[in-house]
Image 1 (cartoon, rainbow, N blue to C red):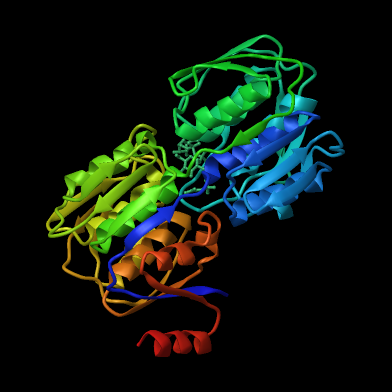
Image 2: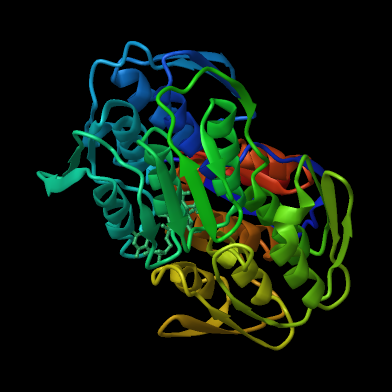
Length: 430
Ligand SMILES: CC(=O)N[C@H]1[C@@H](OP(=O)(O)OP(=O)(O)OC[C@H]2O[C@@H](n3ccc(=O)[nH]c3=O)[C@H](O)[C@@H]2O)O[C@H](CO)[C@@H](O)[C@@H]1O
Ligand SMILES: C=C(OP(=O)(O)O)C(=O)O
């Protein structure tokens, strides 16, 4: 089992290149099998979730050619199976996108119920509602979602909750349905827009992505394309909060500042200086930081995927902060781990009250999920002494070369897999 060992107390300083958005890329790779032509996708993050999904796609007969670490060619012509087994995709959430993609193209799909981070109950009723509305039968049996349609017909669908996954999934299936589908109360996240742009570049006819209503006129066939995934706003935000918490000065490169507005607003509120450029954002953190309140909301609100990262930062800000988590009920687990490092907080329902402390002290902690794991690394980088983060396999789901990027900013962090390696690291860094 690999762990991170971190020697805290070094402000992060410098520039860091941000990769492609995991959550856009997962949907785009799934959509890529909807044509029989070859699709080239670039700016993919080289993270475990992507590799698991590529293996699943290859497993059903698609050609997957990894051109380099960030580029892949996919051809879905020889898909011989529309059944995705649990073993392939138990670790990832986005496997459910194969439902929309296969249902749209072949009018049939059997996909094991998705995995992903244990951050809440994560129902998929809205995905199913959308598929059923378009005429598909959907059954859940033996751990699989089985869906089939004689004809997939466009419909007017109102989502009861704003869901990224349901919006993208139903949009994919609808792009190869008969006639017009209108989706209301949809998610507006940048990755929803990115997937719509990708499908349109394959010949789909999707309008309105990024607003509350998406209109999709179904087409019979999609064609090949070349596409570059948008930058990962969550990876960027993670480094921005790491700069804030370690009192550093970090510029995130290759980002779309517009996608980072909620993050930037909170950094400014707590007292950081933030400079925006065309495709970069600089965060300077000096002097005392002050508390604030945060509520997670669908885009353009403050992202739930950034809640733990702001949480550890607020735990080092003067005063009392309140975080309200309105999307996933199980996203405060990092606060128990942070308590080992001196963090002071109280959770009541979907709110956490965080009392700022002057410093954290290094301790052994465990990553409860992807973003919480990244947040605990930030805490370790800001703490006095050594922190060991266990269960980093979660972090590896969504951050490419996380420790290398942190090291390039002056962070003292190493990936180790034994007590011996840990001791060697301690001897090396003193
Ligand atoms: C792979 C991927 O892109 N994951 C992201 C995606 O997850 P995911 O797509 O699973 O999250 P959703 O946007 O669907 O979930 C939002 C809310 O809607 C609820 N809900 C969702 C679907 C449904 O059918 N019924 C229902 O009630 C969920 O329980 C949650 O409370 O968006 C989340 C919210 O931005 C992010 O935290 C995840 O990182
Ligand atoms: C929760 C996340 O991912 P997933 O939905 O794949 O579990 C995330 O990216 O923060």
